[in-house]
Structure formats: structure tokens, C-alpha cells
Length: 57
Image (cartoon, rainbow, N blue to C red; front, side, top):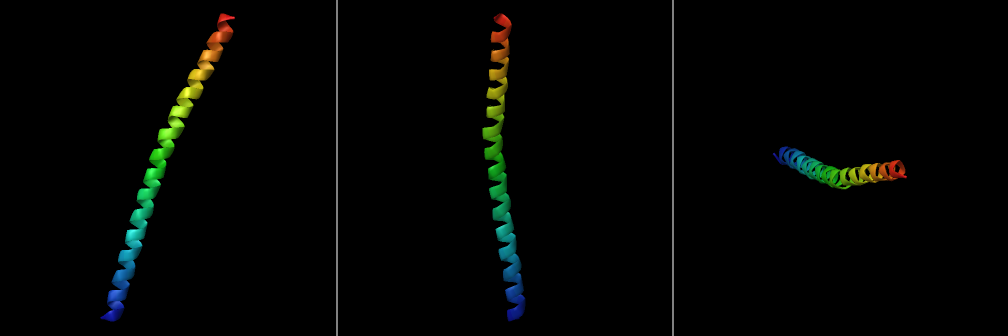
């Protein structure tokens, strides 16, 4: 009975750790998307503005 309880507890802890890791990964991905996409948008707008300035000159 004690061995069974230890196995169950170990599996439960592994599941808990896996869940926490996955949630942290999800949060990290959301943060990366929230930072990287606006940077790309700003970069492309900057490029377009520079190209427009070159065209106007």
C-alpha cells in the first residue's frame, strides 16, 4: 500500500510539474508574440517610410 501511494504521489507531482512548465511555456510564447509582432510591424512601417522618403527625393 505504501509503495502504491508513493507511485501515485510521484505521478501526481510529475503531472503537476508538467502542467506548470506548459503554462510557463504558453506565457513565454504569448510574451514573445506580444513583443516580436509589434517590432516587426514597426520595422516594416519604418522601411516603408524610408522607401517613401527615397521616392519623394
